[in-house]
Image (cartoon, rainbow, N blue to C red; front, side, top):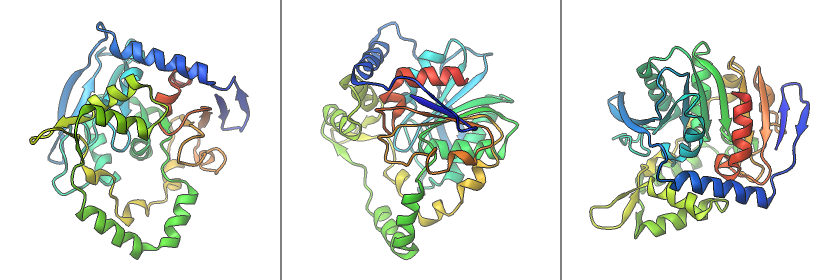
Length: 319
């Protein structure tokens, strides 16, 4: 892992090799399958007419640490992180609208702005004056907007490959143009039925195919909590197929204007095997007032799974 602070100074530690990744995966498996493993309490709250779900890992009275998952994921994706931190924090892991055990939006309202209100309502529901947020992928975009909008409420912010599409993606969109992109969005929104899965094993296979770094134990855990039985047999993913179908307008906001308003110290985590670009080299990290970056070698977009031990070491050090 390499870290760099706002000053640009790099601090290096040995790169994560295949052997250390294997040890991290074994640690995952032990934590996941232990019969004595602590289980969180399922709770709900209402935001904008939707009944939304979150997990409470206990330790009430401790500082609140909110975990926010990414697109087409769920709160149980954070189980290993939550178990590692629950003795020092009151860990809360939310299911975003249309994900996990939260309700689907009846009109497919999954823009960042709707999720932002949901997040604000959850934090108000928890009654905490200040908290720390760790957010992955799409969850990072929501958490960043909250931190910018309510700087007095966020103690620290961690973005786990959570800065969204990089400059190259935006260049591609510019070449496509808004009309072609809107037509494509309409076609996807009209034809997005839930994907039927024959078995839990098929769900595990699809999970593993999406992230080759996952061990079989990790893939099964994520798949088990990511599907629900279908009335006619088999399974479907818990997430609404529309959660990832965004209109052109979703990406018209210049997030640089958001990042510049974040007052909380921010840890930016990146895996070089991710589909996104490196925020340290593409200039996005430098837009934050107070940030450090951590690069996790051999990890991709789901670096909190791919490089769990180094990720937890960096997270603990920052928190």
